[in-house]
Length: 126
Image (cartoon, rainbow, N blue to C red; front, side, top):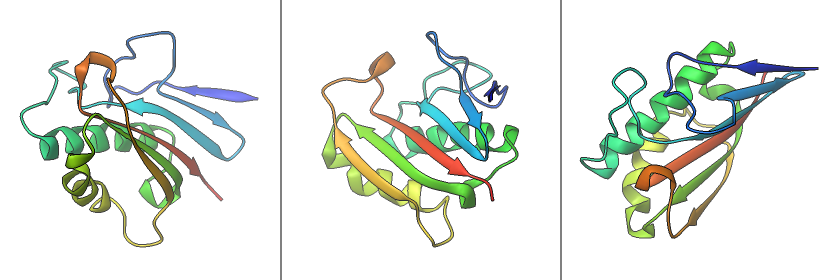
């Protein structure tokens, strides 16, 4: 049985998808971008600010599912410019306290809303 997670702490989906889906003890979080959940403003001033907003959106969904970053086991980072990797990695890493999840980072030609970074996660609650 699956449970759909809809969060007020993340921007509304822009298509036919859910913020997250819980199946058993696993949470699958859709890719999040740097869009403010209340104002809807895209936070594209600089890559660190944008990445922080992405991670805060992920955090909101995790929280609404009763989880936190310690439960994340897998992440995928999509970047439009791999030259931003170090700055994205710095912000991303600050949300974890060791025991980092598995991850891949890929460069793509374009992301929704012309953002620079999108991150999805899978979390497991024991």
